[in-house]
Length: 628
Image (cartoon, rainbow, N blue to C red; front, side, top):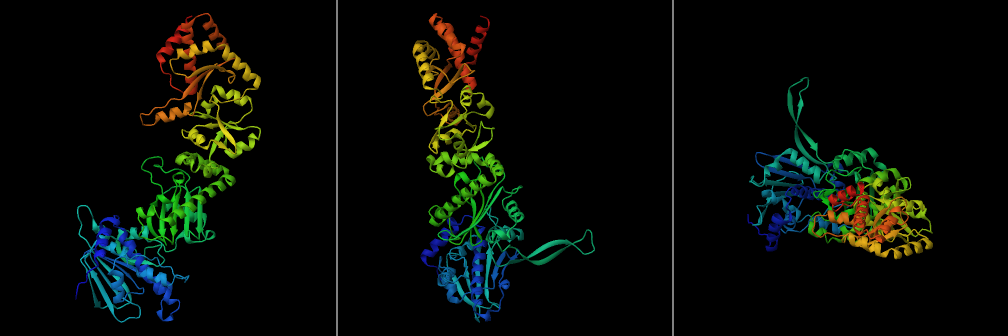
């Protein structure tokens, strides 16, 4: 018997694959089961037109046997088998795939469902084996042949005895090392777990003899070991069934079992798409975030299957970050089992699938918003932050897709409203969308500017999350109406007459206001009288692109690049304090006016939730004023 050599490039490929491509050794079983499934499919396809095959659909079987003492795993099928030439072609040349050739020859036949392209995958067996034997006998042939190899050095092919047709692969499992416990693959529980994880939806039964303990008949404490055949796989994926064949209870049971959740999902999205992107998808929107959702350890992604075979547990390329909360899976006929993280990034088919999935999720969320308002609001409480991030990230690339999904509470009953609802209520005469920022709705209601806006009858959006204003700034406008922060200098509520009056008062008092500004030693960029306030004596407003809330958020981040909003101290022109500061200035009581200036600024800071720079000085000023 002559040992034959792999081609030079095949030796290199085997070494690369074992040491680099497949870092996850446990996928060897997935690859061999998938090859066996292909062999069964080929013979089943033949049985459709050849009555001599004599097997019914349920008689096509994959068997797994374990011999722990001999350190052997056997994977056998009663499929089409391979001739000596096919053993040479399919196993002697890496990346040569008999399944792919068969699929190509019969691509126009609807009954063909070959997974295909497993030429490379077979060699994953060498990740866990010192030696691999393949004994195969084609259906209808008299001779069987054995292919044997101990790795990249070469292989032999010889005639042998085999009673039945099909293929049997024997793996001689490696000895354990300090870093790898190969013996684990000889355990019954491990094989069952790997089949469940990767090959649960192979359509042919995968059988294995298993040992179970049970009470002896008539005994209360004596057990016996029972050895019996067990089918390890479920066979029919729930996502390949028609939606009207699956109950809500079945969806929930699948979700809670598969994704380790204790509550039913708030939404199930079950879809089948054909055309440029052909795939089945079963997606779930959870009722609540997982415990690690907002941590750096959280990994987004959908399970990725190829014809029912799991090829990736979390394919992050299938979900944009703003939909990272979605759980589920995608099963595509157009993807190879041997796809890697590197090739995923450049796979056009996967990108097309991801794009259609993103659109589907967005459409279903919009339906949920329109038809199941209460459920959507509950969803938004948990995951709305992620949608707002989606608007802000990537320089607003996705803002038009997400703007109709976000919500804010408003002064109208303090309930959630969409931007569309706000605009409809505002009418054509109102050209801005008013909003205010703060830690809570209650604190925002205390802002001095709020009284004037409410008095004019305008609805105000409450922005209470740190990303909110960044999101609004990125949107810039909605349906032609720009966003207006009520604490911004550009807030315009006055009539022309009121504008002229306040302009005249500021001009008349400019020296006193300039003195107050200088007294605050750079803390403010300006001081002026305003008509915005009703009961409050003072407020802080911002100029430019950075608001007070944005300053807080940005400066809370772990970096040394601190920012500062351009702050204007505005004094209520109708409040007695306005007359007081003018009087102090005109009567040359500059020292007292300095204290008043610092006190007014401190008031503005406290109302706006900004830290007072010098609490000790503020305490002194208050004490001095109390004893006067």
